[in-house]
Image (cartoon, rainbow, N blue to C red; front, top):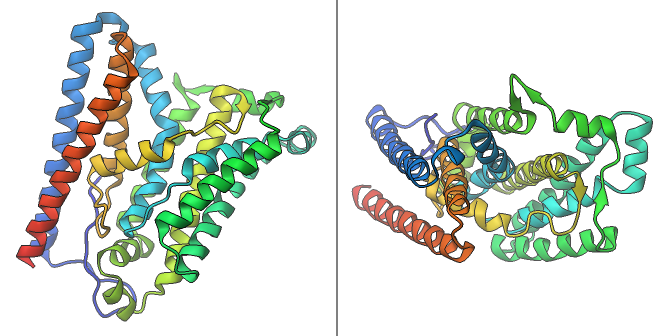
Length: 343
């Protein structure tokens, strides 16, 4: 999987970059991904050397992938938003709201009477509507994305507390639990969901008009507007997509914990942003990479597992994560300066 970094031209759909630019971008993306893979391999070797079979076991590998699945789906939605030059601080709270809404007594009663998919659809719709509201406020209300999504974060968490009365709501639909806690070919369903969402997202970002417009909007909004792209409408689409991925993550959380609560997804927005930035997506927009995001999520999840296996404190873990994020941002700034000087 390669990343996308293009500049728009004077047509409704931005044309692909010149061959030399394409090769340069592909080589740069390859180097970034190789660097992430090397870092991941180093972490795995460290885990094996320090924890032995406890780390190098299949159940532990499934645990790492299972934990990466939920935050990974959220991070993929965040990748699209950051590629447009925006940010979404509400994804964690939206996960909580969607999980609570999907486990209300009325929703579960409808699922019992019809099909367990009612729970899943409800969670995704709640997430998408929250994203739609974010997009409308940002695009048509001209509110800065940071402020708009911060407000949604507070409101969604509060609404989740009101709906659940701050109680934990247990999933009682057996068919839902059986579907989400099962496995296929020995691999948990939730990991398969992460794989499928990642592949679809990669195709959308790198092989479709929607993906090229997303990159164009983030790379040069004025040029994208002159090229005929309806920037406001596209931003609404992107934030709605991000909200929908938070809804999917809520479904996965319900399957993993069997509960819906207003505390689900706490600080997930920061974990998602960190994974996206470390993966190579530019914070200023104009470049996005799904493969990099997936590797970034795996990097942080494996790092956490190594720390847990060695009984190290979460404080030390936070310090290391912070250093990794700072290093990634410094590299991004260097890349941005080099790109600006060469243009």
